[in-house]
Length: 281
Image (cartoon, rainbow, N blue to C red; front, top):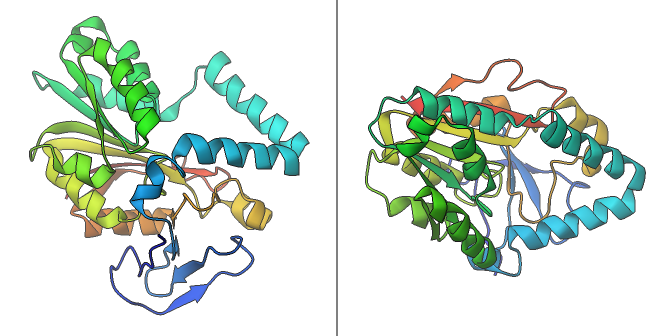
């Protein structure tokens, strides 16, 4: 069953502008005139994300479509990503997460990855940590996909961690207040039907000096303006929020968080990705 959402940032009915020629039918994309946030008005409900519209299903479907529509561009993009990750060993989220964990003075450092997939990011961070830090760090994940939650549970067990099979809101609500040193939302907040309640829940679950690390598609990127409906940040129907630096900062503030880091490289207009590190306000 599809939902019908009001502005996710203001959480009430507001004047909106429908953005035509962006998403295929039956999906309806709107921009909140008051806040500027662009969102999918009628996303599928959480129950669809467990199997039929699970990330591993929609990702493969989208990859196949892009490969068929623009084979040369898709091949170049895929090769560039593989080069960055396998040869240059570049992963900005893993780099930032590792630095945050290493800087923590807590006796037990707890990090959580929302929408953790197979647990790859958590494993990468754990493997990068010095042995002394790794021994006092516990990784947790929350994953709604049935299959990915099963894989993540197996991947985190050797590190003494675990994966909660639930929606992000339900999974996060199961942890006590002030529990985590780091909560990661990497390529996740754009999927969340209730982004503001989730950010509020993250603020509750953070320790006083904890951090929230976010990566989302950068709706303010010049490439989005150039590519139009073919922009790589669009994915239907599982991307339901489209953030700019301003709307992401506004969402953080509304949830009781503040931006600690969102420098020029984090919000670079030539990049399709937007990064931010948040703290409690």
